[in-house]
Image 1 (cartoon, rainbow, N blue to C red):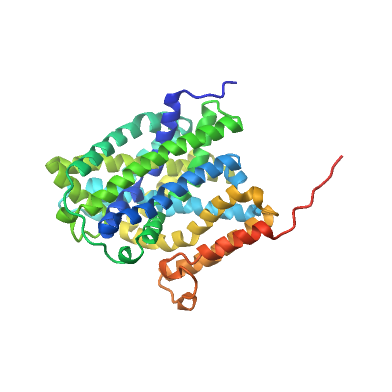
Image 2: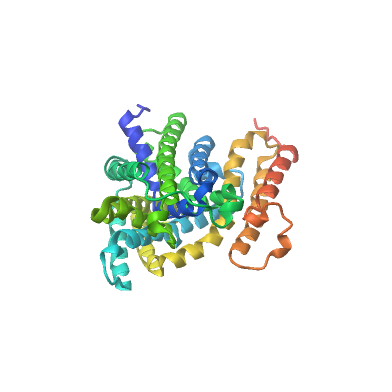
Length: 434
């Protein structure tokens, strides 16, 4: 069987993965972060790129190294732990937070500005229509490369290139002084802001979607699957880095048109209108709608694919369930949804990071099963303390922890546990069979 892809299919695969990643959080968080970072733009942007580009890329590579599936990635964890982690991640990136956020951001930035008096009924109608379209495209799971990679993403990318060129050619203000935590530790603050994109969670699941898409193209062997998976991840990472650098610079030079804006969506809207005049909102609406729609399609597809493997309910029925749930949750409101999601991200992101790093050092572990359980448990324990702080609970007794003041109290304990796991633990006993 032919185990090679044409160059156009490889590029389309990378574009599909890029489109899955580039959604609501990728658009609304960098502009505000850039504005607040100001003169600390470079370290803040580097920190953001680490978690919003570097970690998703490493996660896709880890999936390829592990064997191409979530089961391979978590083979050294107890099955119920791996399943619980997967279910929680799918709920977060699916109907609970990330997927509904795509609909909310699309409404707030692409539709609401055209109404003088927007009401809740407008959001309800739009969310129903938006997720109905997402369900329609998710229905034909095997055609995702053709639909997303060869049709929707090129149009989206052209719009982003036009915006990026305009931002660098005609910046709308001077870079001003940094604000808040960006003054004292911009690198760490940018690193934590990258959590909000949820792309590391997404890549844990999008990698499986890419593997499924490759199988539809006849690529089934492990070696070519890993090669094309990593190629797609590199294309997607380059695209994401291009977008983030552009949006960070947009935010940093937005003082002349969007000073004092409450969120990144408002910064972007005001900036684009200043660049393109009356047509600015139309340009922005096209970019945001396509970015959010492609991500919603990817999230609904990934969630439906996974839940169909856990239950007897077929994939297409899960598409309907997830689409309807997203439409309902989207009516909560963007600010409330972001507020609810932040503590959850602080609790689970360190666990995902630990899992990815363990994949790369697995060959050095004396007892992988013991090591995985130890490191994951330690990362979760200290991440929960960070999450409690973000949620507003009194955890001042833990202030003695290194990096706890900047929301990374999990880092040193998790790293220490990983080093111990390399040197401590009996090697698993070999079973000899005739």
